[in-house]
Amino acid sequence: MRTIEIRTFVADGFAENSFLCWNPAVGGALAIDPGGAADAMAELLAETGRKLAAILLTHAHLDHVEGVARLVRRTGAATYLHPADQPLYERVVQQALAFGLQLEPQPPIDHALVHGQRLELAGIELEIRHAPGHSPGHVVLYAPAEALAFVGDVIFFGSIGRSDLPGGDFAQLLRSIREQVLTLPPETVLHPGHGPATTVAHESATNPFLIPHFGGRFA
Ligand SMILES: [Zn+2]
Ligand SMILES: [Zn+2]
Image (cartoon, rainbow, N blue to C red; front, side):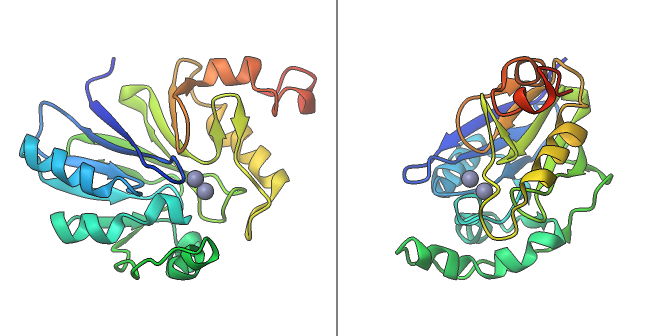
């Protein structure tokens, strides 16, 4: 049964989803992948009077981290990233230049996310699942008590993440989807980095990128 509140922010440009979530019974809030909508996130926090406890990054592509500096400046929250995406994070200014965009350097990462780690932040329990293939240090943030997961750019409604970017690997991405996403309970709601939410059951039954590889039975 879901107890946490989730607000989704969709930015212009890359149309990435950023999330704020909180447990109404507890103070504080978590931010996930603050991108272009970081200021709107900070404003909602100010309106609700919630202190940001942590900024969690599913991975370090530009669109998912470009708001970290602004959100840290306005909230002082600690940042979390898997170390295998640290090199990408440190090249975020260059990532932006590749799109003709100017971006300030992002602040240092405070905490490393580790596969299998269980975190409790602001009254929300998360299990960290390393899911490389789209990027080397991509993680899925699974909240078992809430039956939901933030899956970044691993899997989308009816699609899967790119694996042709530097550090991407198609076989590894499919393995991550099979082992770290489709093993979650079927009713688990997946909140992806782009586009609408979906469920494990829906994607295992209908995702056209998954079905042909396994004769209709990917999971
Ligand atoms: Zn990405
Ligand atoms: Zn993305």
